[in-house]
Image (tube, rainbow, N blue to C red; front, side, top):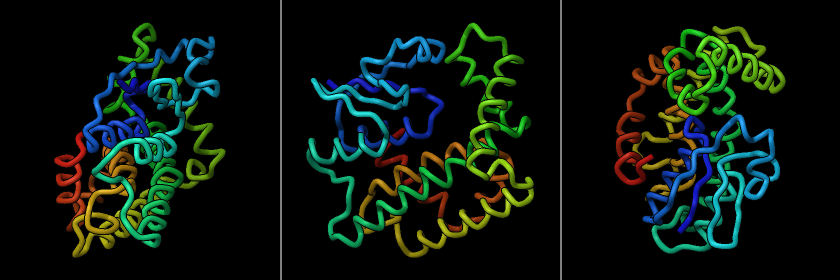
Length: 230
C-alpha cells in the first residue's frame, strides 16, 4: 500500500490525495512532524525535506507533479492525462500555472495577511502542537513573507495582489465556460492542481469574494469534489 507523507495544510498534498482517490488507490497518510524535518528524521523518504512524498513499495517519489506521473504510469484507469499530445501539453501548462503562480498568491494572501491567517491557524497548530499560537503565527508570517518576497508576489501592494487574483479567477472562469473540465472531456492533472490552490486561496476573504463573482467555478469545484475527494 502507498504511504503518503504530507503536511495536511499543503495544497500540494491535497493535489496528491485527490489523485489517489480519483484512481481508487488505497493509501495510508503519515503526517510529517514539522519540527523533526530539520533534524533529518525524514531523510529516508525525502532527502531534500520536501513534501508531499510517497512510498510505493520500494519506490520513493517526491514532488507532487512527479507523484501524479508515477501514479499515471503505474496504475490503471481513470487517466490523469487527457488523450492527445496537445491536450496533455495544455494540462501540463495549467498544472504549472497552478503550482508556480497561484501558489505564491495563496501563500501571500493566506499566510502573510494576518486577518486571513487567523482562519487557517488552527490547522497549522495541529501540526505543531507544542508551539503557542502567537509564536506560531509569527513563525508562519516570517517564513511565508521571506518566500513570497523573494519570488516577487509578496513585494506587490495588496490592491495589486487582489487585482492579479481577479484576473486569474476570470481566466479560470473563461476556461470553464461551456466546458465541465479545464482540459478535454474528463478530469485531469490540471483540475487537481488548480482546485488545490483555489481551496488554499479561499482562506483569504478577498479571494473568496472574487470567487463568488464567477459564473462557472463553483460548479466545477463541486464536480471535482465528487470525482476526486480531497
